[in-house]
Length: 267
Ligand SMILES: NC(=O)c1ccc[n+]([C@@H]2O[C@H](COP(=O)([O-])OP(=O)(O)OC[C@H]3O[C@@H](n4cnc5c(N)ncnc54)[C@H](OP(=O)(O)O)[C@@H]3O)[C@@H](O)[C@H]2O)c1
Image (cartoon, rainbow, N blue to C red; front, top):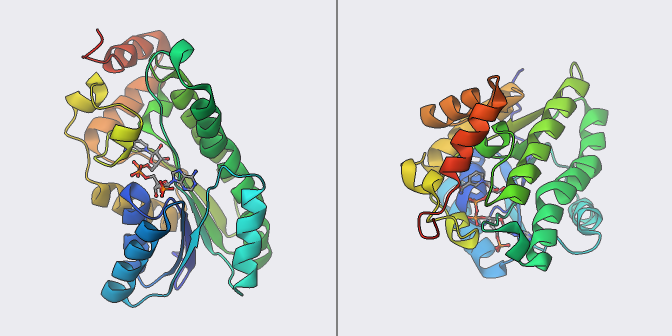
């Protein structure tokens, strides 16, 4: 597809990590931004740096996306600001590792809400105006773990990323010939605060691979999104993992990922 010029791009979780890197790549290409995250200070710092470096317009909206009616509130906020969104980047997501039965129940609910429900509600809200204009992109941030049929130690997180992959694949086909496209980028281990908040540092998967830099993930995501590709996996190691994960018999791939999902400090 033809890349969209001078788009207004909304990035959830745009204050740091992969979301910030994606926002920076869009800004380098001259696109204006709306950044959403909870921490107002960090959001403003990121916005200031991007404005100074690239000169693009950046609106910040501090918001907890797991709050009631967040998608509706965010859409209304953007409308009130007189803006329309050409590219929605559903990046905000959290992880959780460890034995499922002992995991914090509230954290689990918030994770599933953010990773699946909020992503879907935001897409439902921002997609129809894109279709009406015949132009737009939805860029969802999934994970390479979605290509495996499941994984112990982060079973709910992995399943939430299955949702992102399957949802985007289906939506992408629905959107054919509309001028709007949906893309899922599926990073592997990437050095961000996610590793700490998800308590994933001692997992073999995080120790085994050097990971792909956030900048490389962001550039891959940008290109795939602009081209309207359905799915992209950044980095050769992750591409191999994703390929293996979909090969039959999937039971073998399951065992590979079960090994990678072990924590070296508890096993
Ligand atoms: N890092 C990895 O190894 C890796 C691998 C595969 C996939 N991913 C995916 O990549 C995405 C981004 O993760 P990351 O690695 O960049 O993590 P990160 O550095 O922790 O960034 C997460 C971003 O989401 C925001 N956020 C978190 N909870 C939120 C909420 N309730 N409401 C609004 N914003 C919220 C954070 O800001 P506040 O905390 O200020 O709200 C931050 O901007 C996630 O979907 C994750 O699943 C990460």
